Length: 90
Image 1 (cartoon, rainbow, N blue to C red):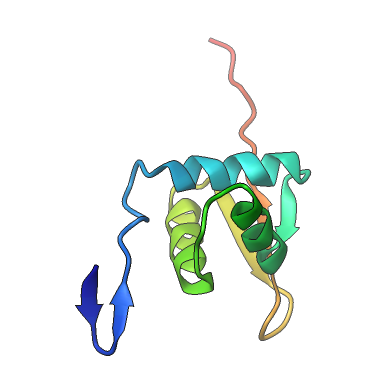
Image 2 (image 1 turned 90 degrees about the vertical axis):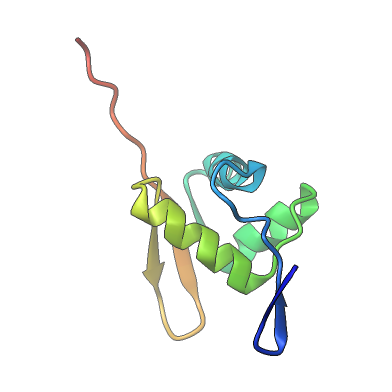
């Protein structure tokens, strides 16, 4: 853990971490769309213990990679949507 101000930051969200693939997997099992807090709860049920700021950081990285889309419903609630790519025939 590194110290960042007064808060300790865990580094489980490095690229290639199992948590990224688990987020995508859980979203897929939830029908491709979920409220952010419901996703966090489902991940915790499956043994991925994240805080809300850690989840948001990981979702931001997945959003940059065009894996998910995060939409704000209001100040507190966000919807996370899995972006499915159509397979291209060669």
